[in-house]
Length: 229
Image 1 (cartoon, one colour):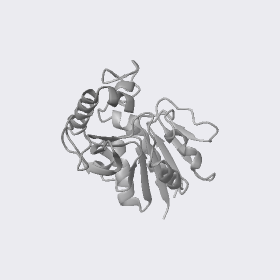
Image 2: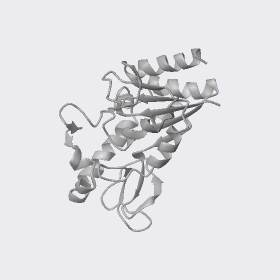
Image 3: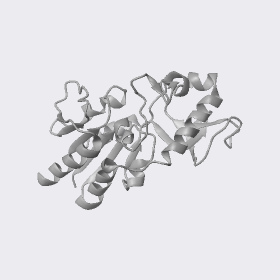
């Protein structure tokens, strides 16, 4: 069975209506990223950070998977390839589209954990407020990897990329590390497609650019893979 590995970034979710970290004004939903997506920001003003993610969580429930999400799920269901999705996104749009092998590098909006215990994760379908405690008695926080924190899933992600027969990189600036370095784990014989209107720099790795938004480029590349079987 051939193995398609897909690394997705904010550009995929943006087409469903979720704003990206890297808007042109340097703000995320009118906040400095350092204030709402870092351990230091949470220590300074936990109420602000919790409210920020409460709003993101509520907004994510109002959007739907787009053509890119649906094409990837359909490819897995119909073509007999193994499809592994490694995403930097914290929404569940890939899962809602029907993809079954999704690894979230940066956590998920609909999960939470204690500030004292990274390993025990709880489902979160509502708000988290100051004074909401985990069973261990510590404050709950979003299960999100903030800037400056370790990315626990990165080694697993590298192992998945190393098994790829084809690698798609979709809607990511290739500027956020360590995720941006994953493409270099792909086998030398593995074709790498970068689907993004902005042609992000891929370092020394030879890639094939598809200068389209995800909703157009993903179905196009998947069709090419089918035709070349």
